[in-house]
Length: 370
Ligand code: FAD
Ligand code: GLY
Image (spheres, rainbow, N blue to C red):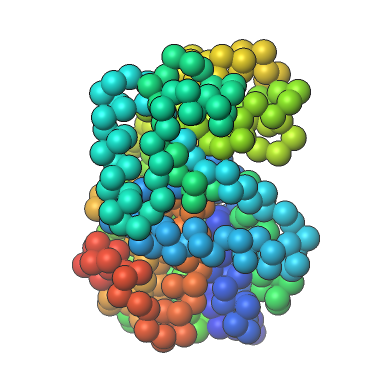
């Protein structure tokens, strides 16, 4: 007889793993499936910035999620032994010229209007805080509350903590379709056979559309490829994250710097190209000249799951019962992973989800059609 679970989560990226973790913490019997390795895709490619953007419809959701990280870091360490590398040194949005300076000063005002700290730093003030940053810049908007984590570690910590709490994980298990009785979902069909559950969550990143498309569910999502590279320096060059129009530089522990990222929409190709890396290297050297003496480490690419509406699908499917979807977190999946796990666990438990967490654009019901 097939084993029965309360919830099956398809996709063990940061989103599926966070959902499994939040459900397991509440005592649910969960099966987490991935056709590859845990966090083998976008979730390990991410730079790990926790940057809540003031012009995004997800700003409130992002702030609520960001606020969950300090407690989460401790919790995940306790369950899994993994340090998610939370750093709270802020993000500097860099102005390279006068036009960008005016833009950022205005954005600073909008941040503050919404209750977020944002401090304009003149070039000399920026250099005082971050001496390795070039003296040829026009200043920076400093967002002290934006931090960063190690994205691969966060994703693994969610998954391993979930297993500590009783979740079963099966890697190399391809979910090939949903098992249904009419419009009621009862499990999934995989390359290892059928698994049955009271509820199925699809969290397959850019591949959710492919899986759901087999059941005529139209999602209108698309991949946005991002390439990154990392280097090592003898001493830590910067404390906070630098974010300019051309690149970002995220300082990790042990003198490691992650530099990203390109954006190319509509491709499932995950190769790293020199054409992608060269402008990133040039831009990084403009921001932090000393970076040219850093030791090369590695480069990689990942596929960000973007939706046509620009906000993720988050919630129950409007017509299939016992099916929910959490997909399309684009550039913010790491930042939004804690709140996504909590929201999905609430939804599956039939709890009311606070209105401010589900902006109208967030509602899945209007977006996913049979
Ligand atoms: P994924 O991590 O892609 O996971 C989906 C999983 O589903 C995969 O493991 C896949 O193998 C599995 N799967 C697919 N189909 C099936 C199937 N049929 N059966 C079983 N399993 C299946 N976000 C931030 O918040 N901050 C950042 O700084 C940041 N930087 C980024 C930098 C880059 C270069 C990229 C590419 C992304 C970045 N992101 C960042 C975005 C973030 O990485 C994504 O939003 C997030 O990882 C999406 O998570 P996911 O779990 O939905 O998708
Ligand atoms: N959020 C950073 C990126 O997607 O590249």
